[in-house]
Image (tube, rainbow, N blue to C red; front, side, top):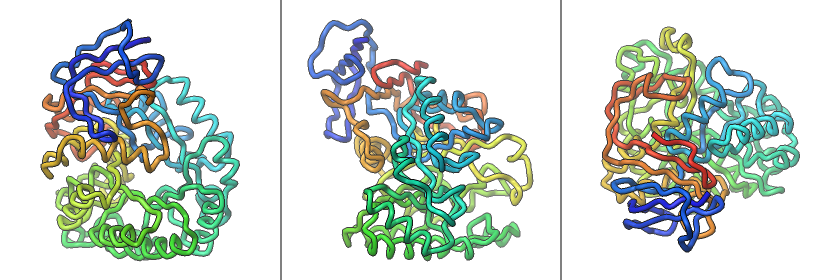
Length: 419
């Protein structure tokens, strides 16, 4: 179908375009010249941007359908303007076999919503002992390899995994946390955790693991992406490593640039996250690092949890929060707070995320895939369970008024969501 998107503010971080104009879509791609439109969308007063790319969205299939289904989370994705997402390997069972990866891709394709990019397990069953057949998993469609939130405690195994990945040019995605230091901790090791009587995770649990991984990057040359940084010290280390020229990138959960340990209040289980909410200083350093480009991308860290698991005492509640539908408004809120141009704000969830993921989307130019989001940057909405299409209703932002409302989402030239 030929679609004319007329009179919107076209913002494309990849090209620097920011102007009122038209976008013509033909045969699933952005067309350089206008033809006869079968459908016209009036975008006056709306921003027309590349569809958002989310590098961390748990879809809970296979194996955890009681928390969410692929159908519900795909609906949540397009309702939030997310047109491409990476799925971590910590499903049940983990994504360590090509059949599981193929099943996930086929299911996602049949729903005809957002594009799904599986991230394969780095080790069998995420047990940190035996390496997976990365070449076979890559052939099945995995774009990178990760342990999700399960660190490899045996450093030699991690070293061998990175050597293997480097040999074939596969990216490795790691979340830096020393499991022995983190122990049974569930909150930032600070005054709030002490007052609430919660076991803490010190910031150096992240720093030590990050230092180890950076040394392995130096030794192997593996293209490595560090997921969901949470500390100021880690931001400084990444900044220095990038100046050194190491082949690394990193992201931050969008929750962590807005919230800190004080938001735990009196044991708010919606704030039970992995990694934990850190200090105000860490939060501010993460927001600044995202602004100056030290941190490449913001992610939703979408992890829907069933209500029963969030009604438990804080220490027993399952960590995680829904985020697909909040990624856009929370990114806009961050950009407004830092007084950034809209194109630079959106770059962290479009152009830069596409570069890390290694895909050709995230841009509006002739020949590019027509993955687009049309949103009203000034329209505010209240975050309530009823307003969220995700099966998981758990978020620290319940009750917040946020600006940025998605009106239309287009994937491969097809309208997949319209408010």
